[in-house]
Length: 417
Image 1 (cartoon, rainbow, N blue to C red):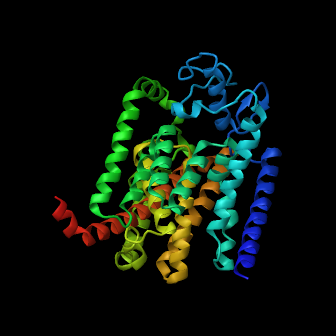
Image 2: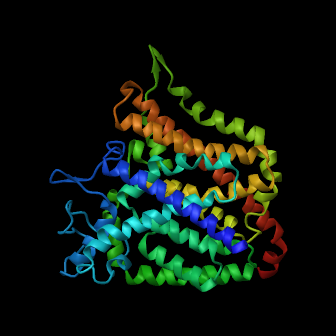
Image 3: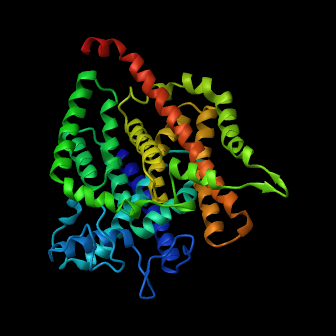
């Protein structure tokens, strides 16, 4: 009976994922996602999976002894390779052309959709109604339409969280880091329910491998950083504290003859101050938050890696919004906390996360389709504020969880010192 119910449950998730995949494929095929998503056009043709194709274009060019870090001759836009050399070694690229350029990205996109659907497993029906908000959101649609490699890294992150094998965890983190830079923070998973000695050993192993990689690939890494402008966004497409500050400084808010620029920062501070004045004590005393680093569960591991990734990306890099898909990794832990103890803060947190995806989608649609043009500066500013507000909540929760972890292991840390 157990296996029968499990089969029915998995089939249900599979068919729901198929349904969402079909609808998303249709709106992309009919080009309904444009110009909300900026189309990649070459020779009057719209190219889908453009971020994915550049990787395999680089693999083809590499076989022709071309320096793909300078320019990819077989790419429609001549884009240079801005990822690790590891991604240049896919086998049989020329003979499996259709598989690599079309079938494989479709499979990876489907696994993303299926994974997000599975996050809502065994939750109440009301929460399942939020699924379209996430799957039809601007960041998710952009990632799927471009078939961006962040999807693959997100799925790797889920596997690391699901399976606690130490060798597999090291291997996947190293592969991720050799593909892009920010997965270096995936190593935060070694803090979860670990002895201080084990944390030092695991982080030391990663540090040694990272250092060797940087030493061996130094020349290519220099070329990648020279092309850093290619993975930097701006305006409505940017997700970073740097972009927020620059946009805020350049924004001029007036009401008639009245200059309201001094009030810009109140729009940022008021919701943060109100939130923490109401919830700070509850957050500090919340058992699920206290146990984030203390219980080695799938939900905790995924939440910690997702949070650390989003915080690092937001404060260190300038990101395109497809990186916001890592916020999806917060969902299982939040929903599990709501199910275990239906407290008001966790419901509020889930609603803020949902609102972020919904608001980002609506605002981006209005701006990119040139609707309410006179309000464009304020709409873009609103998107920045929402991003910052959510990141602050994520940061606070992770910080409190880490402080609780340090506090519980303080004696052991002193001994090892």
